[in-house]
Length: 204
Image 1 (tube, one colour):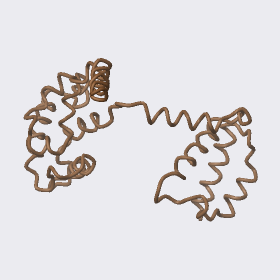
Image 2 (cartoon, rainbow, N blue to C red):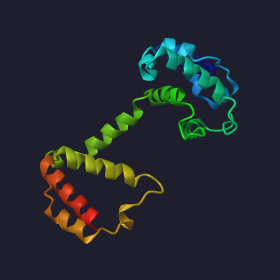
Image 3 (cartoon, one colour):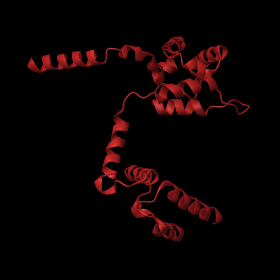
Image 4 (cartoon, helix red, strand yellow):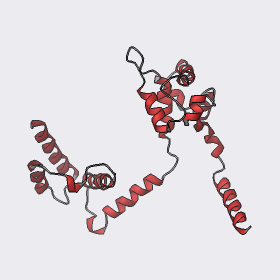
């Protein structure tokens, strides 16, 4: 009973802290089950909640077209409710008509905006944590270009299926440019070396 009371109190505290969660109910339209079954029959509520979308589709007529496209996508044979959110909208974005034009241009813009809304800062916090580890007291002179390069390398090494540093075979040009790079090189010097490297790559 004590555990149950604790959990009930936790839920109440969460609800109090996020009192406006009901305002995000319109985002259910991104779920394949909802989109494919037209559980939300119109995008009108979304336009009311996010007036910014009017500028995304550029005109009132475009907003009406987006509503029409919303209903049409539910009948497209390549889309079904069992798909993941990513696969559903990726497939829709790639659909074209017989003339080679994007099939749902207005809906594509709206969904792109909805999918890009930041609902958590956890990913950003992780990046800042990595930055603190990279730019410590002993490396406080790192410039922006060098810091960005180290950060991208750090993230890339953690991605499964990507080329790892141990698998990489640097070219002679890369090694020569690396020997010229100073640990405290400023952004202009880094940009100059990158330009030289890209020029070498283009000439090969």
